[in-house]
Image 1: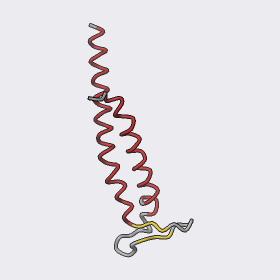
Image 2: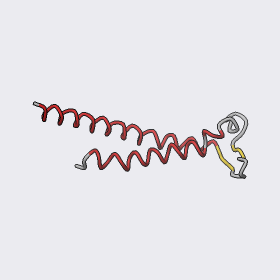
Image 3: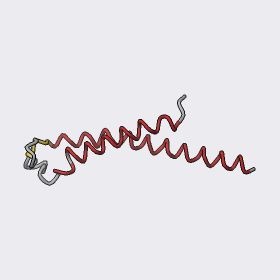
Image 4: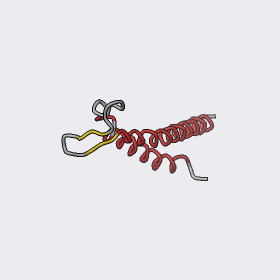
Length: 87
């Protein structure tokens, strides 16, 4: 089994990327993408964004949870190691 430290870095990187994509493709234009009136929105730079950009949040959430769990595992192991070395 891989060490949590080795897994944490790529998982956290993927979570960061997906949250960035969510911010860039949906959240920034959420007021323009009112689900009841507009199915898409033209941004100031001419890009067409759709309400489907919310999928990035659904992709980011599991990676964020896994990264948080791995971070907790690393913290517990560190505390146990320090308490064992102190004894």
